Length: 141
Image 1 (cartoon, rainbow, N blue to C red):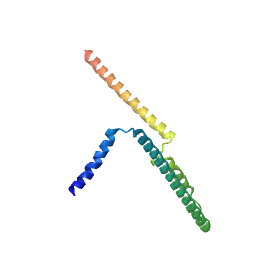
Image 2: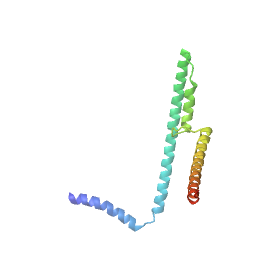
Image 3: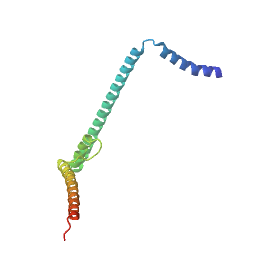
Image 4: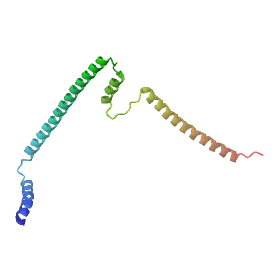
């Protein structure tokens, strides 16, 4: 029994090594087959995703139709804010708030001010150092 298990384990590895060493030239065919299989797999994934999205779109349309019927029945006004938020979500998958041009300009101005204040501070320190050097050299009597 142990010999059988050992032969099964070693035999599979041995045949794999023989195939690699033999070099029958089937590598290009294998690579082409693998690439074709990968393309088919990617295509199948894409089609499945499209079907899923279409299914969910139809379900959402049905739900919205049902919601509208309820609104009409009870004379409830439709809130437009919810639709605006839902439309913005697909545009921003990371759920990050996009900055307006005014906000971007304000940030750039703050950065510029920071650079100017740094420059101003360095100039002031240099002027103070020069003053102290001049005062030490010029002694008033």
